[in-house]
Amino acid sequence: MGIGVWELLLLFMIVLVIFGTKRLRNIGGDLGGAIKSFRGAMSEPEDKTESKPAAGGGDAAAESKDKD
Image (cartoon, rainbow, N blue to C red; front, side, top):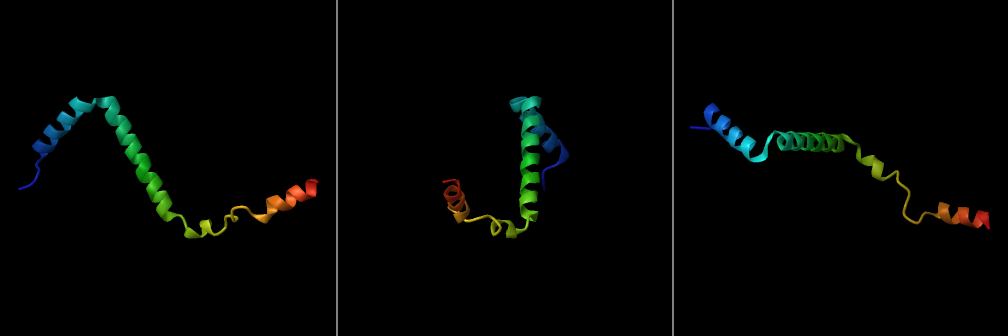
């Protein structure tokens, strides 16, 4: 006992009537983009967070002193 082909087809037709083709296309594109972004974030190495300079770094303060 599971969901058969006819039940899925009926469900798809109801969703199509409620949302329309244009909105379903947009939802599908957004969902695909979110999955692609999630996969990209999962495959990035975690070392990138360590290479960012600390907030309020001394470089900006040193540059302002050089200008004076």
